Amino acid sequence: MNYPAIAKEQIPLQSLRHDEVLESNAAKKKRQDQLLKAVDQNRLFYTKARIVFDTTGQTEEVKANIWEVTDNHVVLNGGISIPVCCIREVYLEGESDF
Image (cartoon, rainbow, N blue to C red; front, side, top):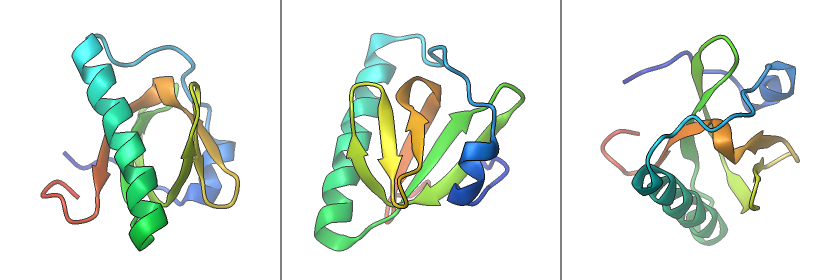
């Protein structure tokens, strides 16, 4: 599914959700696995990821390089961060949904 795409520089201007958007533990595990895979792919091949996330008003997406994943945040290049809890999906370049 396609959502409104924004530039990563617009993320700090968004009102991001700070509550968990995924319900099942399996979905949360898949998200975490995809985020860690995206970090590895960025370090090895400078590969971008498509991140689908929720703001307080709508679901949006951004394509960016993921530099680091902490327990609570995803850090994109340029030092921009997104709370993990508001991320719905993560796709890597080369995946069919990218």
